[in-house]
Image (cartoon, rainbow, N blue to C red; front, side, top):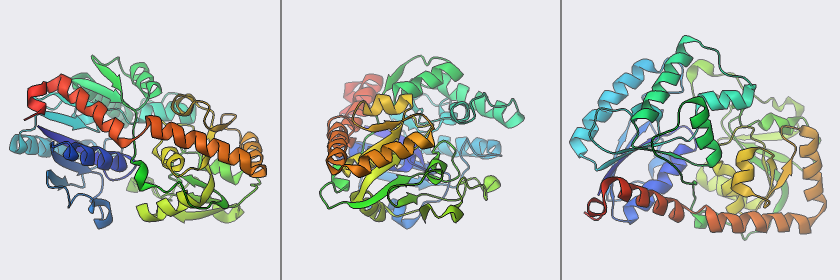
Length: 369
């Protein structure tokens, strides 16, 4: 079987694509991978070289959520069609909405990782203004969703957002994201610090909450400080002048594994999080997780994490102090999150779910070819 997968190199979709593509190849599936956003760095693509069944096409076309993306999207659609004609895939796995209605007679899975409208509603508590760009964006997303053979969301909450802001897909399925547990170290001794991972300019990640408290332990925040869209650079959500947190900027995967492995507590402050790979990585590293009390975190983590009242810095501080005061309580929550992650959110389970979906769309005989 041959599958064409699109991805972007800007955020968590790249980690997701790495797990997906690696798992597909291990199952004997040929993958054509096309990336958008930025040309990936050598460290971002070193995992591809050992995979014999991957044909990789990196591009720098703008992503659909970027300002002034319309012209790039048209060009990238033409480019993608040329790759489809050349590689003749049996199925398209599209991690951007705007390609869901490509004029190709091939089943296509569109994955709803997130979208600007649901982000805006969660962060701003209102619907986006009806400006020209937003109108174009919403139409592009709606067309892509309508053209999809199947729409996948990483949580039931995110699927409801798609149904609320656009329209119910003709076929929809929730496939939770997954990571490979062995990429993380849950067995090393913990240090007395709090970790959070998130883009500083993203109000959805809401790491600024951590600057509004008097923390019981040092706080380290890992993530890009500038917006991926050049038009919005310089708009950082966090000022380190308060000296309550330490900004570490972007980190390599090896560095991140170290931060996760040594952190006693992970602060999941997001007010918008369709799934959340960073809390999952923290769970696989056996961190105790303090999470914002939002529906998607409740869905993903149940009672295995320590919640603070939604978007409330005083409650966040209270829960951090509660965990800091009791090593036994930290270990309890760390083990609860670790065990839930192992049971529900492995990359192997995620890839199995996608392969099952592919089989239902293209037929078992094609899958085995």
